[in-house]
Image (tube, rainbow, N blue to C red; front, top):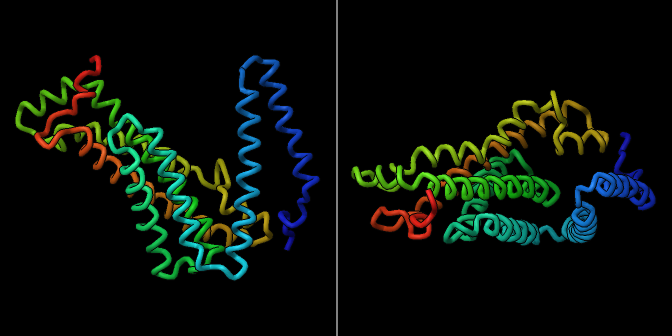
Length: 261
């Protein structure tokens, strides 16, 4: 097998950094003001990948019992990130944690139980990270979109409530829109997989020298896993967001009633 990853040295990584320099020069000449962001992103990616590399070496080298700890750290980081993006929603961090956990448990957990994915760190951690990162983005999009839409259409929402509808019924159309908005990226990606792009899992296997048929089967499992995970995250995030944007008496919370409409 032609394992490309084994041929890449630290010197090669250094040469690849020249491309970052090119992007910074372009940003500078075009006055986009992104030079600092590019530099920070490059530094953070380098240090984070280096750190996780050491962690994975340790876990893979006979310390498989730490796999749940690694996944929990990923869920915690995703919770902080997603909760921060949706911070205008009361209890955003709790909503994010529940949504991401539901996505991970409802997809990776099922695949492990059914034996589709082997219960080993080398499989569970990479696949878990994919589910968690996608669920994080979906939860953020659903929380933000639902909060913004209910605030922008609060008079219409209140009209529904005045007719005797519950908060769930009154918010139903905006709930559907928010979940749709959160799931469209992964749906679009699934539609064009293999035609526009070769996704990460498949690309990684091909670079490692695996046969295309083996890479394709793995990618199918991954894409269907991500679709399921995003569905879990979107539905949970949407339902919990509604519960926090309305009072127990089925009224919009005060902060939304003050939004200019």
